[in-house]
Image 1 (cartoon, rainbow, N blue to C red):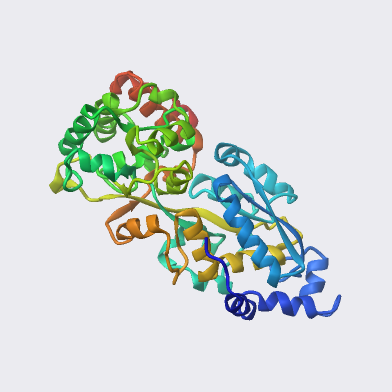
Image 2: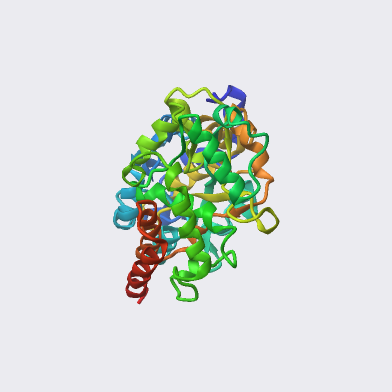
Length: 429
């Protein structure tokens, strides 16, 4: 992980930390911002106090601890505590915790339904016009806006495209990634004949089972926003294009590991890391976890192309997520904003990226991590924005994703679609 030099710290102190140092020099009640903070804070409030940073990535804890320690060196009046919840728990309970204001002075949100729900609840402070926004690629932070306001900044640029063990793929005699569905099935056959599971899929973990849906939808859907329109009734899971998706899940049954529909995310990760599966059907956000388990093989991304080569629009899927925000209910918004400003510096963002093996949305970051370098060509490939996050109704999304699990478990695509549509019709009312 990157260690900051004295020169880096001085530069940061002159940049993002300067306001904090100036605030520290101001006397009590000596400025409008202090008065404002004393009556309820706001983003211009004092940059001091103990703040909570709420997120769901336990695998990033050590990297954030190092960043937090460096932040404290130049922001002596602010201390940061990480409040980490498992992703499934965070998805379902974060908004209630944030509303109270005692947890998550600075927080993260998943793109899509959770971000929109938090925004609707008035928990996200308006960051529009804040200088930190200039540090980001503007095209990659649109998922953090709502109603014309920038209510958060997506920090991670991840690829929701299966990880591939390039050693196993090479042994299967693959010169290049299959360009169509039949080519992908042929690859899966070769991998299976070598005695490995072609695909490790965490079908028992709702949060990650749906990642595979992203790549199976993007080239089958009639429009880029078709998946999200299932909850408005403009499309149904009984439509021919979605039945094609479900039928492809059925075709993949022989290539998932044994007991796939009950497999946890950790178990699928271990199967891939141990070289017992050639693909891990989640995404680049698990590369660090794979390495942590001792894997030394080469890693690339490989998406099943679900159509013929001439009809394929996308090579894979990406997402801009882990949306950073300041809690509008917090009495320490000034300190929370200082933390976000620090995370937005290219040097700090680079430390996070290289320490966690994830690309970021911040401009000017130097990637030194070997896996990030290996996956860098995907930054310019034609990938679609992950469609599963188009849903704003999580009950509808669960019904859709559960249909894929049912089919993988043996149910016919037609029956699974009909049953799911009944649930969707009830939940979207």
